[in-house]
Length: 334
Image 1 (cartoon, one colour):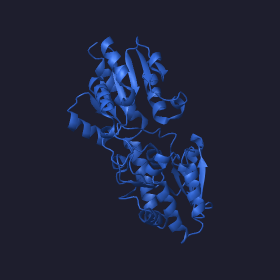
Image 2: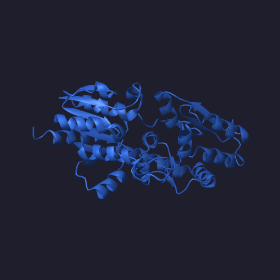
Image 3: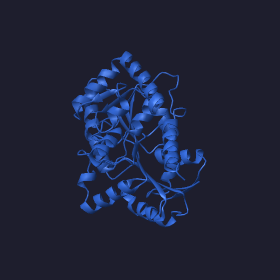
């Protein structure tokens, strides 16, 4: 069977972004001939299935596939109700909502990576062509090491202006300002590509004289990322909204104790295997960090629970089996 994998994204993302890589690998491991494209014009309409990432760009391929009698699957985070985000479905222009809703209603199947969004859309739209299958982690790659964890925190935040606000980076910096008053040796390493808000972040770090405590790594390799996740004392990711929280899942798989926000899909991901913040205030973030730094037993419990939760509920084979079953169901009558 032939599958076209389509996503309107820069080409290198197919080999860099984990969830694109995983779905492409899954389709290939299931034995399908997979064509990968980021352009409408290169979609192979002789394919048996068009596998689409993101509803935002799905209208045309879904419409054309429907006219040609082809099957389509759309997947991703929908951002259905996300008031903390700059944009969600209900704040899009009317014409965009119409195109997105058409794509969802007329796709052969929609795979939501968020259980919250799956439940909301199922309830509101009464659709039968939707399924839930979360983002997953390759647990043999993202795994704990045997060495003692080091005395630093780690976080992944790229410094685009909107993203650093969503990821509470100014609040993290202010929480560090609070913590260094008690522990001048406190350190947090923050990885993530430089965006249009990087200078604002750097200026804030310099303003509070925290350049020795907050180390901005910029973009790092996957190998380096795994090393930090394996060695950090705590992985910190407060956020105003997370459609899923893949970096949190990767950290959990490496056994890192987690501090994250109870926002979006995070509670379904973390469960009781990490510390969930109720808000975004620097004082609350600082208090949670101080609590875990001073309680090695709690860190150990979170570490063990986190790894176990990912291994049981969010490992690669779960999504592979979900996609296998969905495609088999779509083509069972042929």
